[in-house]
Image 1 (cartoon, helix red, strand yellow):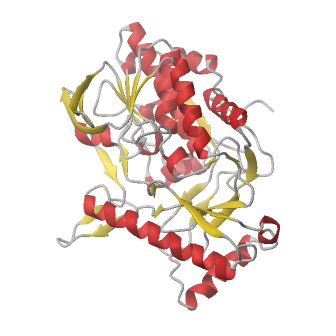
Image 2: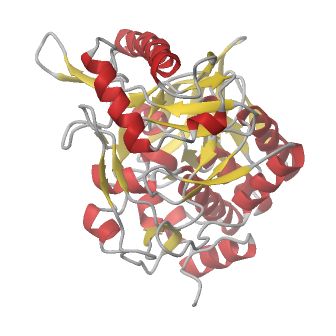
Image 3: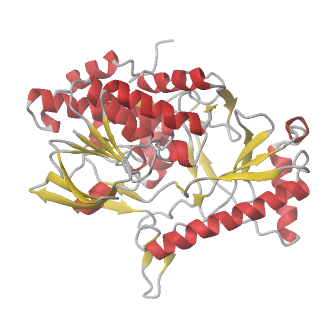
Amino acid sequence: MVVVGAGSAGSSAAIASARSGARTLIIDRLPFVGGTSTGVLDTFYGFYTPGEKSTKIVAGIPDEIISGLRGLGNVVERPNTYGAGTGITYNPEHLKTVWERELAKAGVTILLHSLLQEVSVIDGCIKSLTLATRSGLITVTGKYFIDATGDADLSYFSKFAFEKAGEISPAQTMTTTFRMVNVNIHKRKSMNKDQLHNLMEAAATEGYKLPRREGSDHITTVENTMATVMTRIESTRTNDEGELESVLDNPFFLSESEIEGREQAIEYARFLVDKVPGYENASLYGLSTFLGIRESRRVYGDYRVTRDDVLGATQFDDQIALCGAPIEDHHSGTGTNWAYIPDGQTVGIPMRALLVKDSINTLVVGRCFSATHDAHASIRSMAQCMAMGVAAGVNAALATKEAKDLRSVKFGHIRKGLLDLGSIIEMPKA
């Protein structure tokens, strides 16, 4: 079994696959595993429901990752700025090693510095991948494949159908995160989020270039250090031919966006030092390794989760995980749209949304799974990505062992495999 993309979804898929008895290879273009969880962010969201009563809805392999982090240092549980539930903040440098340790312990073969270039497909069945490595092109074969690239690269090169962000609904924007050191945390806490946002609005009128006016900062696992989610970079534009173009359509656009993100980070850091209590003696120290892309391509699966599913807290016969996070739409302009699931409730994530519609041997997990723009804006949290990965890994491993295709594996067997790994697939009884 081959997993393409070693982010939180892909790494979880590979661990689950190997533990379920399948020989497993995981591939990533980066020199480390973890993807966005180690290269952009420092907080897992989605483990708990938001609202008056916090309920834990993701467990099993993801819990083991948290346990590994605690073994290396401090882990902080904290409320989200916008009521999206408790976040689990960690040291992303520790997480790189935790992911690697867990993959190795499960018996997964890890291949880094490998960029997908070409896919051989016959009648909807992926046969092989061509990867660009530092030693040249290599070919990888497998029986089942999981697209955990985040940007649906595997499906794109396979010519499987997907919706490009911005085609139907406006695409979510991107963010370059950054950290500030030597912050007086006590003084910073004297100001609430509304006051911070008012300062942003005032600073913008003075000439500070702040495209987003309600960004947030939060404590980290390192003393006197704050992390930010503030910058806002457009992920689509109209090209010279009048066509919609995303950062994945044009490598020059992507390059310009990476540069723009860093420039914005410098400006937001200047604003923090000049205007925000507690930051007077702070310095910018650490930019995200790459742009945080919230939405790019979303693959068409056997089922697409919708906005009505999310806000109606729909449950499915074949659900493999739960999500309680609100719809969090980082659109163009200075603000962000939020829509909440009824308090204490969750939407189920169906197995059908992980089965690539155009393929007989491919699953999709993570932020490129099968959902509409709105539903995706809720379910893309990293805890849900991990839970999806576990389910896909179990499904693929069962298909391998039973010599069947993905769709012929009985859901009861998948359900048992998930429960054996400690996954939560329905709300605990009160």
